[in-house]
Amino acid sequence: MGRRLLVLVNRAAGTTDDDSVEAAVAALGRGAEVTVAATADLAELRTAVSGLGDRRPVVIGGDGSVHAAVQALDRAGVLHPSVPVGVIPRGTGNDLAGTLGLPPDPVEAVAAVLDGTPRPLDLVRDDAGGLVVNAVHVGVGALAAAEALRFKERLGTVAFPLGAAIAGTTASGWALRVEVDGRVPVHSGEGWAADGSNDVLMLAVCTGRTIGGGAPLAPDALVDDGLAEVVISTATGPVARAAFAAALVTGRHVDRPDVLVTRGREVTFSGPPVDLNADGDIEQDVGSRTWRVERHAWSVLVPT
Image (cartoon, rainbow, N blue to C red; front, side):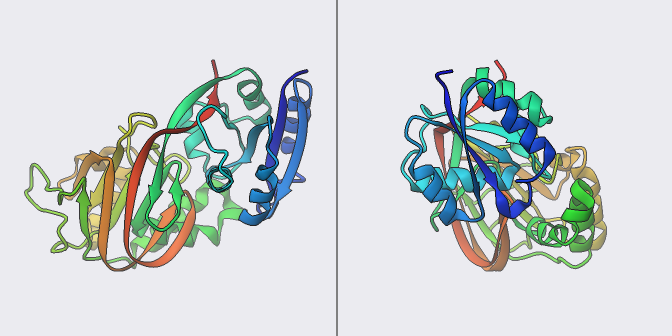
C-alpha cells in the first residue's frame, strides 16, 4: 500500500457524518493510506494542504468544494498537473464531475481515485485573485443561485430551477460591456453587440458544460483546450426570459437570436454593479472583472 491520500471534506457543507462519505473513506483506505482533513473554511483548507507532501489530494464534495480545494492548493503553491486531484462527487450539483464522466456514486468514484488516469484541465483565473474550475456567470444566474441557497438543503437539485424561476421574474438586465480577447463580440446573425448598449441578462465564462446540477449552459465547452466558452444572453423581456430559461434545460438556448456564443482566452466585462457566481461562490455588486484561461493548470483523476 504505497499510495498516500489527503482526503478533504467540507465540514461546513455538513457531509462529514454522511454514511456515504464514511463508506467512500473506508473504500479508499482499502487501497491507500488515508488522512482525512475536515475543514470549514479556506484558511483551514490552506493549513491542511500546506502539509500535503507526497500525498495525493482527494476532494469529497461538489463544485463548491472542488473550487475551494483548488484555490487552497493554488495559494499553497502545490497546484500542478503533475499532482492530480481525486474527486468523489458528494455535492448538490457535481457539474464538473459530470463533465468529466466521474461516477455519481461516491464508492464507485473511489476506483477513479485509486486507479484512474490524470486528465489535464484548464483553469480560469480572474484579476481579483479568484479562480474558476467549471463556470462563472454574471447576472440572472447569480441571482438564481442566491435564491436556490434558501432551498438547497431541503430540496437538493430541485432548488436550482426554483431559484431560477424566482430570479427570472425580477431580473431585467444590466448594461454590460463585454470584450473577448480584446474585442466586443457581435452576434453574427442579428448584428447586435455586447457593447453596453444592450441590456444583458446573463454573461457566462465556462470551461465546463453544465451548471446547477446539469443545465447545459455551454454545451460545446471543452475543459482542456485552452479556451473558454462565452455565453451572452440579452433575453431581458418577460416572455424572452421565460423562453430562454426553458431552452436552457436542453441546451437549445444557444440557437436563440438573443444569445451570442463565442470562445476566447481572455474575457472582460464592465458596467453597473451586478452579482457574480463562480462555481457556486457568490459575489455581490461587481462592477468589472477580467478572466484568463490557463491551459492545463491542474489535473483530475478520471476513469481509465
